Length: 546
Ligand code: SF4
Image (cartoon, rainbow, N blue to C red; front, side):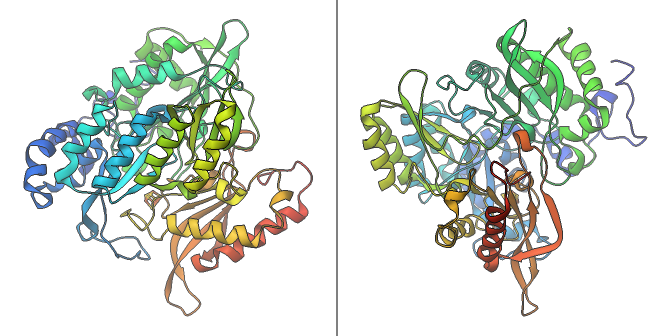
């Protein structure tokens, strides 16, 4: 251990394993110590699936199930409260949200069809594309989980570590390997990380969730991940990755910081392993609210973090490297685009990521009829069909249109995202998914006359609570759900507004307009006013965040 890393910055123990603090300091740490979270799979298969929901040990139900991608969903009709505090067991429905991890966002049409059919059979035809390239199903019963896993694993998919204090799905470019704009294809590194480390028990008890992004271009919101590898060309060594650590949103949002290190493709998995172990060993385990890697990085700074990573975990120095140029605007891959091999890819926008099992089956069929067997999910809740020959493009876009997935969506449909919200999430104060869908329809009507005047779509992100699953702080218009006082003095669903956040060239958090709360029912009026003011007053080329 280096002298720099040998003592905690603060006098009070943060529960850092590397400093000798191994006793659990909160109930989550205790639960992980009582039994390794990945052991829950055997109990689901051998006990709970046979005996049913009521047989589930509460410590598994509200804790370890997450490591297998399972959360209890919110009991139907349970309203949001002004504090959000409700005894958790009151909120538990006897059904689960199941998160299918889709590393790199990469699916074959066969895999997509299997997920869609699982949804039709076991999840009441629900399917949401998340902004972490996962697919979430709802209404899953514990009795059906082993059969769902059997079908998923039969096509190389999994729910392992899709949730929990462990390495979550690895974000990757939806157009890796086919885009003229990427510096390097990160797919081999993503595959290696998944192959070597997902399900590795030594990495499955981290202080908190751990998010990774790897891309040869800036299309994966790398600034808000715990660790990210961003494509860059080194003047001597050629294409590789710039290493960033410590990004994350929720409360206390932080943008990731560069370590100034260039990593070649074949070393990404080892460096990722090193960063993950730094987090495991030095991450704060006393308070859940300070347990993400961003707090350690903020306290240490990038120099010390890099020194510990190199000296204690890699046993060598990393190569210094340049920063990638920031890009302007969001790269969401919506629309029809050229691939480097002469084919095309087609990106479509389900409303705020909401789709269905039937639609996914339909997309798989449409893609195959167009000669493709590769589909991608994006960190903007979009679906992309790859490898479409020119003479099949029209047939594909027509088929996708019939599925309600236009390749040329309105800017509002294209740039609106929403988290799960009150419909299924136990932490939510307000509805988000359905509200976002209605808002898009409203804005399509209200703002049809100004949409052509906007060079970039105005991004609108809705969260149901402060946890920021929909990245509200980095949206043009970020909306944080909360209960507000309605005109009649009664509690009503509303949103706290954040304006002017962004990523890339505009990386920064939106201004929180203190005291500025908008009723959910009045969201259309509010967004229309803001967008009209921007459309009227912005200079040519000036982006919303500027
Ligand atoms: Fe649930 Fe809050 Fe995340 Fe929305 S932001 S999905 S309400 S935890």
